[in-house]
Structures are given as structure tokens and as C-alpha cells.
Image (tube, rainbow, N blue to C red):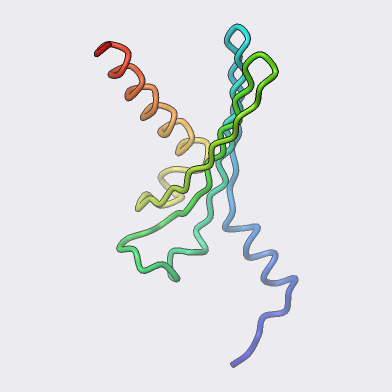
Length: 106
């Protein structure tokens, strides 16, 4: 078995990694959403059709109090169809829709 020289592995990892960030400000609330996705784990996961795996971090600050929420994402959508920015927009749309349903139900 041959090991890859570390610079090769770092270049490969950097080529398969994508990142997107958004910042929203509403009144006294600031929300930063950062999504980092990679295509490297697709062959390692026991998850059918996994094309990209990501880490979504939401940092919300309201009146000086900061909370952080981390969510893992697995998708079958290939990078050629959805980069990190597109996936981040899709997750935002999902939560916006869910929030809208919750708001209208109360």
C-alpha cells in the first residue's frame, strides 16, 4: 500500500471542498450561516448515493447573546449541480418554509 505525500492530499482536499457564508441582520438580530461541503467522503460513507457531505453552522446574536447551532448535511446532489452557495440557499429556503408553516399555524 502506498501513502500519498501530504501536500498531494491537501491539494486534493482543497479541490473537493467548497464553502459559502451569508450574514443577515434584522433589528437586533444578526445571523451568520456558514456551510462547508466536500465530495471526498462519498466513497467512504455507507450511505447510498451520497455525493456531498457538509457542516452547516448558524451563529445567531441577539442583544449581545450568541448561540451556535451545527447541523450535518448529506446530499445526493453532485457538485456540478449545486455548489456550497446553492446548497446554503436551499437550506435557507427549507428553514424559511418550515418557519412560515409554524408561524401561520399559531
